[in-house]
Image (tube, rainbow, N blue to C red; front, side):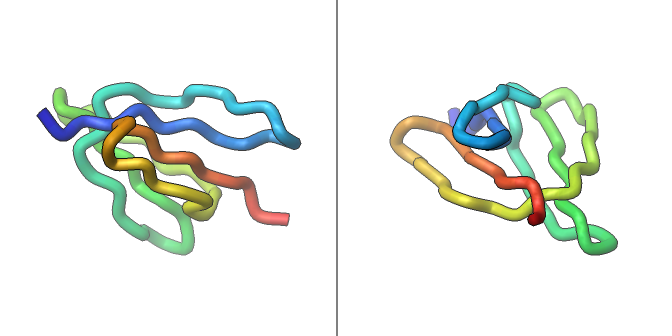
Length: 63
């Protein structure tokens, strides 16, 4: 499958904020994360990196 785990970089420490994410989309100046079950989370962050082979997305909080 193509789900990804989403992490947020908090000063060099990666914190997992959501599993099984299938959609990331900009929404109202933030990022809307949607998982395979339809659960949603709106986060104030920007994309730092996307690793498709590792199914991992890393976000960074705005400075």
